Image (cartoon, rainbow, N blue to C red):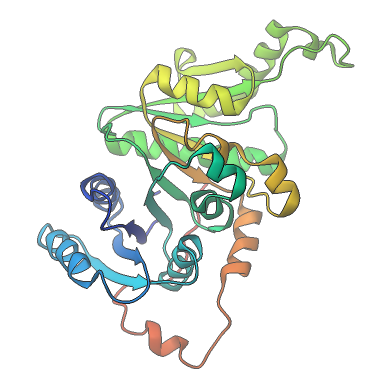
Length: 310
């Protein structure tokens, strides 16, 4: 989290701005990152709105720039700006969708989580982070190298944010139901499965100082348990990972991050594995053009991408 140099803040004149700006200011204050405000819209209708916010934030001592753009959809516009400015974090306020809309169309927030190379913070509630509960949700049963690196990033970000906000870090993992026909006898009993998952979490507990009473291992599906535990703990922020499935299989299977967006009653920070980040950066990178250097030469800050540290 501390490596972020530029933060992209998606603003909307149709939504109250205090909620998303409060989150942006907290993160910028802790990371000393530049805030790049983006209005996703055609034309040039938000100039005064953006100028007002920029002036307010500049007076408070923040480094701020603004942009209004449109590339056919909000998620494509956000990713284009994230790549052009080199933002290590995207902050966006969530707009819930009806079941009918989700059945017919893939919501824009889902597409943003799938395709954005950087971590994405979806702001959902007014619950203050300061002194609050930060929940890091991992899939402890997937303990291959790739997943352990992703899990470490999830818990590490949760730890950093809890320290930044003076909050308390909790960690959770869902585990499968016992299966009597399982070849591995450990998977035949709930007690032995829970013991296995707790053992798999011990390394993270030791590294990030998470006591046993702040480790939550529960039986069931992650898309149900994560919102349940977040609600039970009154979490201010839930940190999760996304495998960023794309194509037909992704549309059919879905990601836990997408499935819980509407049901979570906390803010949510979504991270991705490093190999997926690299692939998405390749997909998102614009083709080189003679005007590229001219278009970005006036930015007074660092353009390098910053991936989540693990």
